[in-house]
Amino acid sequence: MRKMRKMRGPKQRRTCWFCTHGIEPDYKNCEVLRNYVSERGKILPKRTTANCAVHQRKTAREVKRARHIALLPFVAENIHT
Ligand SMILES: [Zn+2]
Image (tube, rainbow, N blue to C red; front, top):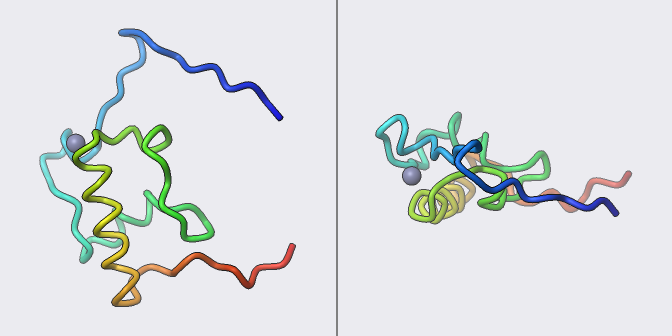
């Protein structure tokens, strides 16, 4: 258990990749979406992705779509460590 200190202030910019690049999350763009899921196929939380609320929601939706047409894996449950 580690304490995670939240850095808040003007020094840390929370830039949304989609806003920066002026594009919208798209299920066809699985190369981009892949950056927003963990190794196990889970959608990363907003605090990790630094997306804005709008794009985080869109990303989650597009990831789900991408899963549906098998561009991205579902959560891998059969991994035994
Ligand atoms: Zn954004």
